[in-house]
Image (cartoon, rainbow, N blue to C red):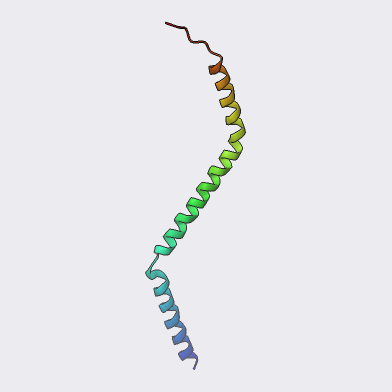
Length: 73
């Protein structure tokens, strides 16, 4: 009886292993989706952290350029 159970266990394990390793396209798409989520998170975090500083830099640059005089030819 024990040998029969061990044989069935081996057959099930090997069959399951073959089914799981047969097609890995789903795993690849999940990995790409996780990379996209991570990229969007990093971009959003960068925008939040740098947003105020960049706004100040562009405001100062705009004021400087706006106050410049252009000589007429």
